[in-house]
Every structure is written in C-alpha cells, then in structure tokens.
Image (cartoon, rainbow, N blue to C red; front, side, top):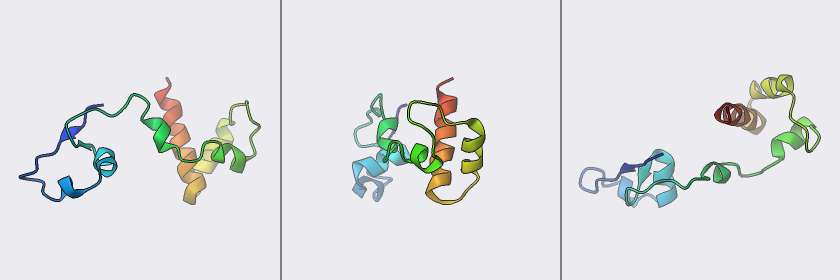
Amino acid sequence: MALKPVDPDKQKGLSMLPEDVRNQMGYAKKGGKVGEKWIQSAIKKPGALRKSLGAKKGEPIPAKKLSAAAKKPGKLGQRARLAQTLKKLGK
C-alpha cells in the first residue's frame, strides 16, 4: 500500500501532524510505504474480542456470535466488525 506524498507548500497543516497520524490518513512523510505487517499495530488488545464473547482459545469464533456482536455498539462491535473485515482479507 503506497502512501500519498505530503506537499509542504499546499498542505502546511498536514506536515505538522505526527508521522503515524499522517500514515493513518494515507500520507507519508517521505513518500515511503507502510510496513508489511501494518495490521498488527491496528489491533491494540489481542484476544479481547474472544474473551468478551466467551470463545475458547484455539477454536474459531462462531460466525453467528461474530455477526451478532458486530451489530452491537461500542468496543465490542468495533472489534467484531474489524474481525469480519480481517476474515475477508485472508481469502
């Protein structure tokens, strides 16, 4: 995934933001690329979704439980929706 370059003449405020914030927005400091394992930094608390759903470690989370959790608000819903998205990326 290539990041968009930052033009300091046209985007003055953007160059003042921290590099990780610019990277999340799709901009790079030096026009570089995001690391190969960028998604690992997106998951702040590994295992939190599994624990809150009561799924056993080492077994997949049932699809019905995951889809029901994805409809809920808050962190549980966010984590479940991210899990569904990551599941699609693996295909």
